[in-house]
Amino acid sequence: MIDPFGRPITYLRVSVTDRCDLRCVYCMSEDMTFLPKAEILSLEEIDRLCAAFIRLGTNKIRITGGEPLVRKDVISLFRSLGARIGNGLDELTVTTNGTQLTRYATDLYAAGVRRINVSLDTLDPGRFTAMTRWGKIEKTLDGIFAARAAGLAVRLNAVAMKGVNEDEFDAMIAWCGEHGFDLCLIETMPLGDIEGDRTDQYLPLSTVRARLRQTWTLEDTDYQTGGPARYFTIAQTGRRIGFITPMTHNFCESCNRVRLTCTGTLYMCLGQDDQADFRRILRAGATDDELDAAIIAAIAHKPQGHDFVIDRRSQKPALTRHMSVTGG
Ligand code: SAM
Ligand code: SF4
Image (cartoon, helix red, strand yellow):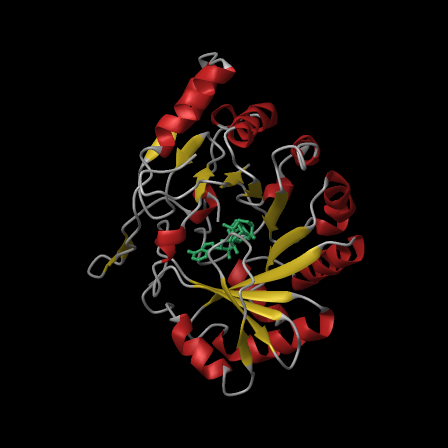
């Protein structure tokens, strides 16, 4: 599948639920209303759609959410997708908040998952609870270590927020070095209507990187995971640090991915509204050929790029759908 701008579309991110056991301040409001079950694709429907994407050349799938590991029986989806590794699919990964990993890490490994991303914005227990509104850091840390023990390579994702966790990045780099994890810093994106002022929290990673260079030697590397992160190796720890900068650096030129929501809407771009409704197509009884044709038609509408904007007067994001809906 090649989009109208010549980019091969090889990477599918799939949100399997809009629900979550945490309420991170930058992601959800405290009183989120979740979707009724009938609107959510069944795991079989998700599997069928993924199979179609793999048939058409997708070789990497990331399962996300919401919190993917709170979805009932989600491991059965990992098993059926994992069975396609080596048969069209090269890699199956997951992004999780880590709270369920003590329970699922071994199952994920057995299903064929080898690398996972775990979101951890701080190492401070009080701050963790404040940022997630009600999370307990021990649960996530136990999950991270269970994942490592199960043989999974772990990359930690931290959303960089001005005045919130910016004083911790040195400590996090040292901690990741000590325990064998890569770290990826992410700029906050204005997605979804949440309480509070977003422009106040925005911290450009160009500033963070300049600050980190005062303590750490960041060596250029051509390491790539097919995602949007730009990586460096930290000479002192030997681990990698990635930067995802949707706001300061437009990474759209090399964008290889599309996103499927838990309701079956395919978004061609995280920052645009172009979409196609696959739940309707699936539930209308589409054949595999019809499904493939619908996917190809949707990819033909992938936009060239995004331009996140916050309306400064209303402080409302330009796009009101939440990250937990599109899948981070
Ligand atoms: N619940 C899982 C987790 O937290 O890893 C998976 C879904 S979550 C939406 C995926 C990623 O998106 C997380 O790393 C989270 O920190 C990030 N995220 C959520 N809202 C964001 C925002 N407004 N700006 C930047 N990153 C965001
Ligand atoms: Fe849940 Fe992940 Fe959003 Fe946090 S970032 S509220 S863990 S979906």
